Image 1 (spheres, rainbow, N blue to C red):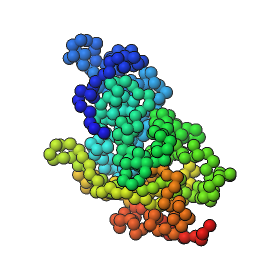
Image 2: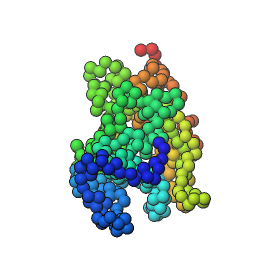
Image 3: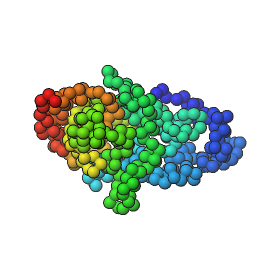
Image 4: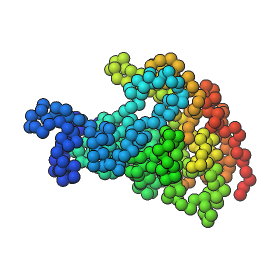
Length: 379
């Protein structure tokens, strides 16, 4: 996605904008400032991004912004869930500085999805300030989730076809990830739980009910009458991706620092590579009872933040570096579901100890497969 020219970032498509409900409101209603033909006066007290905290949008869109602060896109709680587990309380302040420089740009506001491109990719209006009810898959969703999710889903990885939902169904991101889930990360949980309880906390996308779940559309899978015998046999033993995903991107060891030339923060990963590994489920629960899931290596290393201080992740081994993954490259037919023994007895696709870096063995004990399921006879 090419960066926008400066004038394109602020251009307002006058006729199109004025024809919308937002175009009937005075600019000062959202942006503050003062109504004046003089630029200096008009810009006094101007709020450049009125949606940054959700308060301005809440004036009219109360239902959508009611859970603004709890949305994972806003709070980035998933990042801190991992940082807190691997670090220690005495390093919190230092890591907050690091987080502000390198991670906080992933925070999204209402405008980042409905008016402009996210700031992390340069910002700029999508349609001359016209508010889009449905975010653009390419200019909003995959602008941030591009290197992995976007490339997988759209088939941009060499020799790997795009996700079947895109290729054959022409489905976009919001076909599965609806507005209620985006606006409220606890939406799926409130169906069964009282989220006001102090013990209830959604910290990452795998900590609650699956939303969306494959069964949301494929309602008969694994149930009585399912014509696919393998669905019935494996039931809740395997996550759907174990049989229906293909190779996806993994990354090693991200390191962050401040450039000595520009003074700007940057990050650099050790390497990125295509992989496909099945491992043990690191957090089995009622909603995800699977024994086996697909694992992806995350770009974490004990020295990731050493620019900001020594040994900032003293409990690095508290979490695996090979983590539960749900790749967006689903196929009906895959190498591992071609036959029983394409999976059973095939140690190449299971995450065994010999495939893990020696320094990461301890961290990955919860997901390493100690013994590959043996090959079986011809059905």
